[in-house]
Image (tube, rainbow, N blue to C red; front, side, top):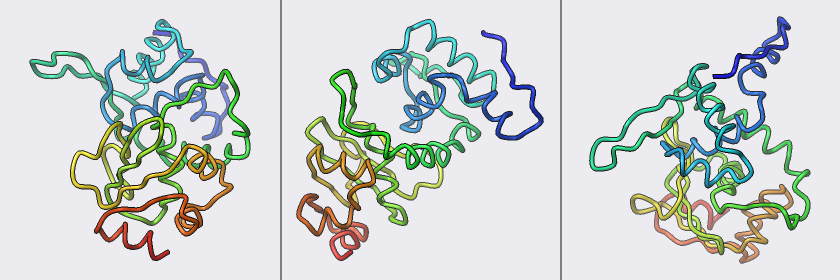
Length: 209
């Protein structure tokens, strides 16, 4: 476990950065907002991080009360990492950081990795005020959102675990424009760039917006 470095400043922002300011820490939080993850899954969805650095960050985050590690019952018997309530409280921090960084996205570079579920947090921002289980279909894959969830995972890979309140189908260009803050979700729906299916309250609200 690496010794904690500190800015040694009596300031809450500095103290927060003492805990989450290391490279990769907030991106690990982004991944764990989907719920418990195995080390191998985290490594696969954090391209560019070395195994040593990931292991070190996870130990630091456990020490600092952001994550816990537990063993799954048989037949899984693997260890998973998950956010504590303190770690989960970083969701609005990540959302504010993501909103601030929308103009930094620009065009995707040839070296940029992408995962379908990395669009989850921007779409949750676009659904601000909506509540329900949403399944999203992209060319890169499917993921689901728990819009308005008070506790627990806020998104997950793959199809929704139950009948979704709304199913959104859109192409990557449209999702990218929404993620950059260039195109409101409601405008994309009205323009026919996002198809909304479902009989839930959320689907009806999106179609009528």
